[in-house]
Image (cartoon, rainbow, N blue to C red; front, side, top):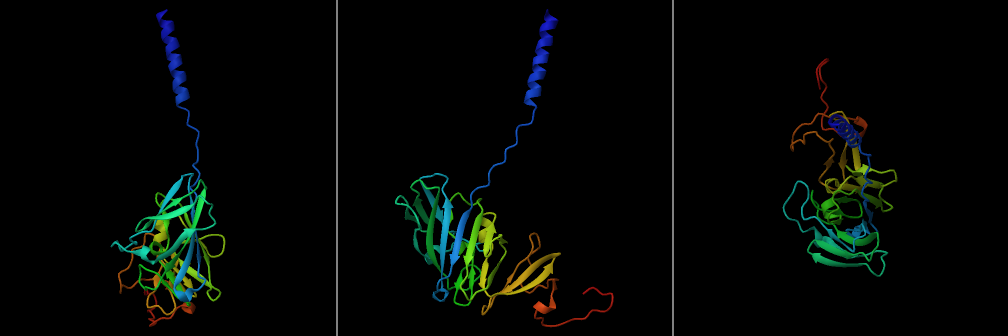
Length: 265
C-alpha cells in the first residue's frame, strides 16, 4: 500500500513539472505611440518657426509637457523656454486647457481625448551649436531648443514633418528619413535632441569614413559646418586630420597630394 501511494505521488509530481516546464506564450508589446511634430516657416525672415505637436495621453486626464534646460554636450542650465511664445491648444475640444506649471513646463488638461495637439512659436536668432538660427535663407534647429516633449515620454518615438518654404529645397540631419518626403524619425527623445536639423539649400558633400557613407553639411552664410559620423567612431578633435574618401566633384580641396606608387595616401 505504501509503495502504491508513493508511485501515485511521483506521477503527480512529474505531471506538474511537465505542465510548469512548458514555455509561456510569447507576447509582443505594442510599440508606444509616437509624439509627432510639424515644423512650418510661414515667414522665416521674422526668425520664427511654428511648431505643431501631438501627444498621446494614454487616457490620462492631464499630461505634463516640458522643454529641456540642457543640450547634449553642453549641460549648463539653459533658458530655452524664453524663446517659446503663444503655446495654445490646436483643434481641441472644450475640455482641453493649457497652463504653465513651471518655467519650462506646461500642464495640459485632456478632457478625455486620446491625443492632444498644441502649437507654439520658437524664436531663433542666435547662431551657436546649442541654439537656433532662422532667416529667409536657411534655418539650423537644435532639438532641445525647439521641441516641447512630454514628461515620462522620453522612450517614445518622436516623428518630425517639415513644411519647407517655397525657396528651400531640403534638409540635412542625422535623424532617420521616413517614407514620406521631409519626414524624419527619432527612436526616442534623446536621439531627437542630439540630432540638429539644417534646412534650406544646404551644401551637402558626401564622404566615407570607417567604411560608412556620411555627409559634410555647410549651411549658406554661416561660419560653421556639420560633420555627421557613424555611431562608434571616435569624434576627432578640432584641427585633427581625419582620413576620408570623398567625391572630387562635390568637394573643394585646399591642396592635392599625389602619393608615390604603392604608398598609402
